[in-house]
Structures are given as C-alpha cells and as structure tokens.
Image (cartoon, rainbow, N blue to C red; front, side, top):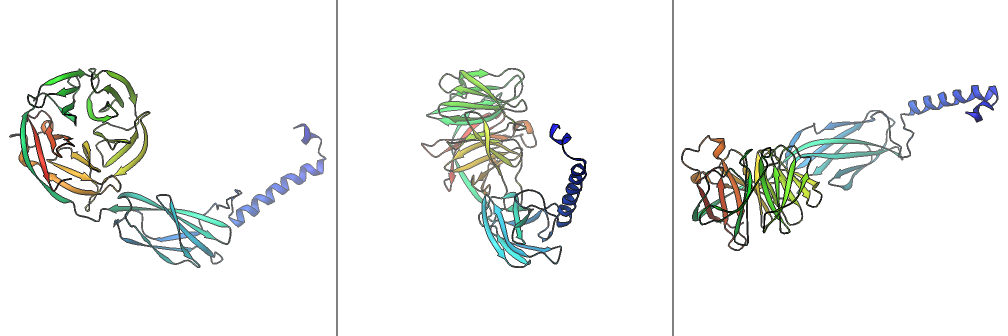
Length: 368
C-alpha cells in the first residue's frame, strides 16, 4: 500500500486500463493464464462413444471428435488408460479406434487429450462399461468329508492354517473369533466381540488374524496362537463383509461389486477392483478366500461361489453348491451359504453357511 500511494495519479489511471485490456484479450482468445496452456471453454466436440457405452474386454471402440471452430488444427490426440498414454492420432479431426485389450472390467474412464494449434490442449473423459469377454466355466466338486458345525455359529469368515480352522461369527451379541476343532465342530479357543459389534470376514496375515465388522468401520487384529487382541483399526469403507489376503494386501468386500485392496499395517486403501462377468456387474460379494492366485467369493443370498481374476475383475468360474444347502434353508437369509477356507496341503476347500449344522470338505474339478 505504501508503494501505491507514491505513484503519480496518471499511473493509477493507466494500471486498471491495462488490466481490463489484458482480461478482454484473454477471454477472446479462450486461453487460460496457466503455463500449461489450458482453455476455459471447450473447442473440441466428442461425437462418440456415448457416456455409459457397454463393450467387452478386447473390443475396439470408435472415438469420433471434431473441432467446434474452423481455425482449430488438431496436432495429436493422447489416450490415457491405467496411466499408459498412447498417441493415437495426428492431423485433422476425425475417427480413431481404441482397443480395450485386457483392461480391467467395470466402469472405466478413458482420458482423451487433444493437442491443437501447436501449444494448446483440451481433455475429455469418456466413460465406458467393460464386460468380461469370457463365459465363466462351471466347476464341479466331490464331497470328501462332512464335519459337525455349530448351529449357533453365524458364519461370516473362515480360514484354514496348519491344521487349524479359524472362524468368525456375526450378529450383535453373538459375534466371535474362534479356533474350531474340525472333528467336533466345537471351539477350542474363542474370544467374543463387544455387544455393539457385528463380526464379519477374517484373514491371516503374518501370524496375525485380521477381523472386520459390519457397520461400525472398526477392525481388530489378534495373535493367531492365543487369539489375544493386539490392536484395533479404523477404515473408511462403508461396510465390512468379506476379507482375505494375497500375501501382500488385504482384500475386502462391502456387499457391492467392488473389492478393496488394503495395506495391512495402516489399513489404507491402495487399489479398488470391480467384478463383472460377461453379462454385467456381480454384486453382493461376501465372504472371500484367495486360492492359487484367484479370489473365491460367496454371493450373498445365492448358493454358488464365483471365481474372480484379481488382475482384471473378470469372473472366470462358478461353483454351484445348491445340493449342499440344508433342508428348509431355501429363502432363509439367515441360513445362506457363507464360508470358504482353502487347505493348501490337500487343495481341498471347506465350505459352510450361517448357522449350518455341517461343514463340508470338498474337492474341485478342475482344480483351481
């Protein structure tokens, strides 16, 4: 302020005029003041594809665009998908094809950047829905053994480690984490959750059991030998349903078609995957198990398990367990299939459900 007071009166009149003239020129040229040379209004029109266009993985998509003004010269076009930019077009506006390749399925956004008039650029988001290009194969199974299961165990998570079966049970006032004697179905060790918690999925990571809860957005970590609670953690995911691990990340479901990849130490999200088959989105993903590079998931309320490719989100297989459902459980959402535990020594899988009287050991064909 002191400096301005010392300026001559004529200078004070000239400065606003210069500022006004500069603003008018900037508006008429439609250029921004940033060094990147971005524009304030769109000069490129995207003709196709329409928002929400549905394609399959591997398809080619026709992208059509044109300048809105005759003096616009398109220099090049860059597409950005999964952080891999590719220059796909040079010269005047027209049509280009983008090949979906083995891109992740789901609702995806392609960022199209048009470089024009030597130094300017403009970006557009093209939103597509990408389905799987494969039909899930049907797995069959053979029952190896049947074991008793606690009919008051509202199974939410199941895992097998070194001959021991760990189980998480749900419902407020009934939630627990337990080590189960497979031969009897009775818990050898058990810890109960507070009355305000609804237990959900569990995963074993570096000799610690992680357990999530339904709607409280709180999880617990236990010593796998003693089941003594080591710590608790918070998470921002809306609801906790299933939990497993690929040995690097925890993988969590929330009852939608999404799987969340979580860094175990601080429980921060590192990635997100949408699950689709060749028909569309697969929702209500529940209990999870990671076996031989594949994610197996119960679908809440259904009598089958889906097999998911963790790289692409494609459903690659399906295991129908309708014949294992307890008598009278059809339509009872309190007795749905829920619980998958793989035995790496035998390749067999243990499956059960909420308040089921039986735990099954099965062998899949083909093997996972």
